[in-house]
Structure formats: structure tokens, C-alpha cells
Length: 265
Image (cartoon, rainbow, N blue to C red):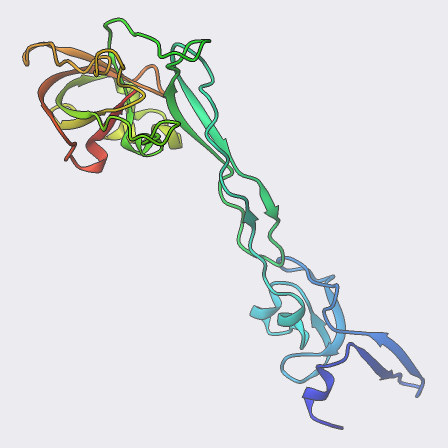
């Protein structure tokens, strides 16, 4: 009998029965790969410990050390693969705090206990700024609508002709109050609301498209108000998360910690 390497190149073996008859049977893991521990995922062939007999082609055979000799070549783990993210959708509702989504699709399902598929859907708070003619809406005086700085990173920096947009400015505030609902919801698009804490200084960026073209300002930025005036804010993505703050100052750039940095919507 030759070395075990001679048996790794073939999945057809001659088995000699107890009465001397010769039978042609297929062995190895080709076409027999199974997930988890599956006792039906079994065949007769050379095992990895060079013992001929019953061997398995399921994921757990690596732990129980009873895999067929070709398990790792015939049953490699394949992780889930997904497409790139789609573009962000429009706001689900117009003229009020709402949410937009983006999705991605599964291109290849995991096999042989490969890595599971990641999240296929993301959601962010938003506010629809344009009317049916595509013009920016002019908002009346009201609360400042805010969301996380992460949302601002996805905003365009250039117009459709490639010209740079106004970089905007930053306004610093001190939170004075907030509703309990800011920390109740546990959704990916509401995690940032946990950092809304009374007494903390926060930075809020005013930039296009939240910045009104005619005034160069954002709704609720408080620039025309005295520092002692109590102003109102509303978190986008959770209409029950709101409160008050006081303006500290206007700056060119926001330099607060990431968890204390927001954008006007």
C-alpha cells in the first residue's frame, strides 16, 4: 500500500467486502459539505488521521477530529458578501422631521459556516428642504432641528457644477434641558441622542443645505438672540426628544468632541 498522499487525489475507492467482493463507491467530501454538526453528513473514506473508515464532512468534524481527508479543500468556509450601499433615499415624510434609508444586497450567502451577513439597512434622520419645484423652503422661526455630525459627513461639498459650497459656520450651545425620551429608543439612528446631557457644551454646524441661501443662516441658530435667551431644539429621528439650550458663541469651525457635535437640519 502506498503513502496516504496517493489516496488524496481520488474520491473513488475500491472497497473489499467481507466475502471478497469488490465494490466501486464514491468517498470524500465532494458535494457533501454540511453546516454545524450533522450526523447524516457522513461517508466512508480516509480520515485526516490516516485511518480508513467512517468520516464526516460537517463543520464540527474539525473539533471532533473525524473529518474526511479532503474536507478543507472541498468545504472551505465562504463568508457572506454584500453589495455597496445604495444612495440615501429621500425623506420618508416632507415638511417634518423624518428619516431616510439606504440598503445593500446579499451577493453570496455564507456557506460551510462562513461569516454571517452584516446589516443590510441603515437609517438616518432628515428634514425635507425642497418644495415641488425643487426650491429651498424658507422656514419660519422655530426650534432648531438637529442630528448627529455623522449625517453631515454625507452632505455634498460642491454644487452640480463642481463649485465649492459655502463651508458654513458653527454655533456653540449649552444644553439646559431635555426630555427623558432622548435615551429611551435603542435604534442605530438614535444612538447619538444618548449624549444629549444637561450642562454640556455642544457644537452645531450650519452648512448647506440647511443654510438658507438668502440669509446664510440656519433655522434656530440663535444668532439674533441674546445669550441668556432660552432656545428650543428638536432631535430629528425621535420627535419626542427635545429640549432647550443657550447660545454661547458663533465660531468658524466646530471643535467639540465627536459625541458632542451635531448639525442643523
